[in-house]
Structures are given as C-alpha cells and as structure tokens.
Image (cartoon, rainbow, N blue to C red; front, side, top):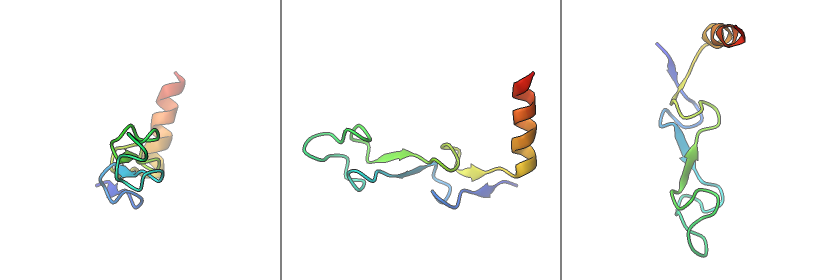
Amino acid sequence: MPEPCWYCKGTGTVECDYCQGIGFSDGSCPACSGEGRHTCPECNGSGVIRDEYEEDDEDFDDEF
C-alpha cells in the first residue's frame, strides 16, 4: 500500500507561497492563477509516495 505524501499529507496540492493560499495578491495571484494552491512537487499531485522499486521499474519502461 503506498504511503501518503509527507509534504502535502495526501492531498496532492500545497498552499501557494506567493499569496499564502488566498488566491489573490493585487488581483488574481500570478503564481497560482487565483487557485491558492499548487501541485505538490514531492508527489507530483498523486498524493502518495511510491517506493524506490516502483519508481526504478517505471523509469526502465520509459527507456524502451
């Protein structure tokens, strides 16, 4: 069973640093387009962290 991402706590998104999650800063936030959140950089929005073996296996498939 995959573990929930430690960075986003399994949500797949993180609060925008530029607007602190409000969604606007002198109008619509240019960093998050007014959403107030970004895709989590640690899990790429999946909400889970895969183990090393799964990641290596996927990379192998991409090469061929």
